Length: 456
Image (cartoon, rainbow, N blue to C red; front, top):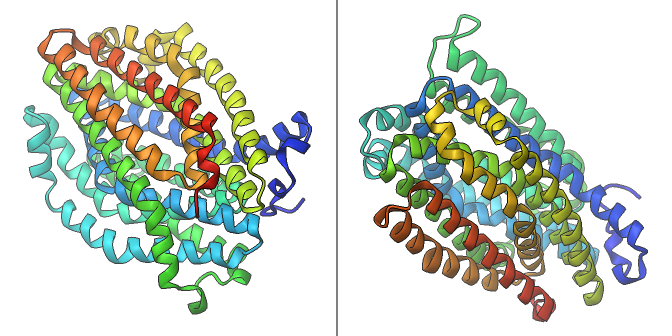
């Protein structure tokens, strides 16, 4: 079957389980490969910067969270593009999938790029709000300025990712993300440590490397879209539509709000850790990066489920859409169990790779084991929330995510971990309870089935 075709048009319930699993893996594995490579890159970045000391590690972690927050709302357009592209592919209208991609790129270019460039001039002020450690602020502000100046490319890359995954071309996403990471790692080695005659830039070098890498990725995506989607109207005037902009925004705004609140919540979580001390902040950065090794592969399964659910609904197969979601949940939970065990069995090994400060490692050890044990349950929430997004039920996911994170998790983490003296472990127990509750609600929403009537 050619890449980009829509085998979800066949009712999932009529497909044997083994064939269903093969179809899910064929779509999910390239996405997971890209996600896993992103995780590995984050770990490499953390390991490289970690050799510079705890303040540098804290600066990069806090800067990365602020950069995520600044672009999180617009990254939601990737979910909107994927939902539309999957549904239109299922309906046999690939040109309208291209229109959704065009709409997201136009919004990113004319709205987000000017905003990100403005924010790039304010990074010293932003760091002053988030840390009381002058060394962390001095190291982090230039790094964040580089990341923010290039974040328009990140938004474009997410829109392309949504298009490739929604149309079933996840291998295009994988091949491009591998190039991005290779560029980033090479430039990190050159600019952080001053190899090949380059100046030794430290944390600033990490920021420059990331900026160049994501810009390279956007250029590759454009070239590949001309090859794979040129016949469907990519960069053709006939495929620019105000109606497509409205459709993308209708799905993307709730997803973007969810992402913005999620990112803001993690920035605040970093701030809570910073109130406990610089080493606690450094430990939190290590833990977040390690947790992403598990959670983003589950996101890969979730994105695959979003495509298959959307394509099935486009073909009018509501029962089959549910079958794709449930089967993917089973696969993702098994994968998350294995990754969690890998982290839990040898926590000191992983922590030793990412932080050379023994006190930081000791602070992170028990939270890491707890985090590892929660991974299979978290997979349920990740996959089913992405399935709901792929079906167009974006508002339900947004409301649940924001209420649980901001109404429960963050207040409890502050009152228990900071004011109550529970420390770093209390912060991470609170996070685990939040993610478990989110999974339980997603399970209930998906099981009830009202999402099958959502319009895209």
